[in-house]
Image 1 (cartoon, rainbow, N blue to C red):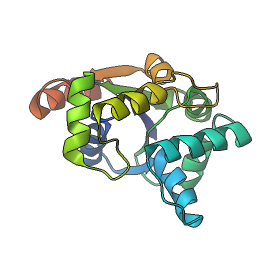
Image 2: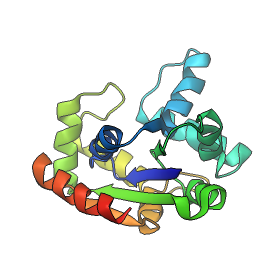
Image 3: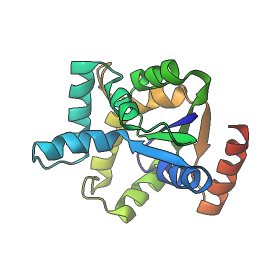
Image 4: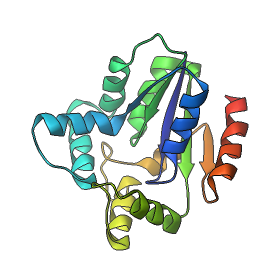
Length: 186
């Protein structure tokens, strides 16, 4: 069974990759942030992206850098041809998945220009997303590891460990073509 990890910058297009994989393969999908959201919902706490980042950091600090990946894997059934683990933000999560699945694990990074990503954030209008460019830059820099401790967010380091990197600065059709080329290599 293949295990695909998805990492990348905020609003770069990880969701498009997931959707394309789900069209082509019998997949199970889990987002690491959904694990964090579940914890916040149990506590009946409201949240935004910063709250999610804070709790993810707390969980990694308390239980190990790999904890979110470990929890995700424990939820996944083994009866599918592929598992997708989305939202990898700490290198410890990658290390855990590589150790657990060996050569069956592949990490895909997705990136795009900052201005393009901010426009996508505005158009998707999620309640947890920043509303101003300044707030977006602040959250984006933290997400990429700026000022973070080793147990914190560090999508930049995660992207450097990727087996494949997709740039998503164009239209959806061009991006799907890039994904098709990458999928042939997987």
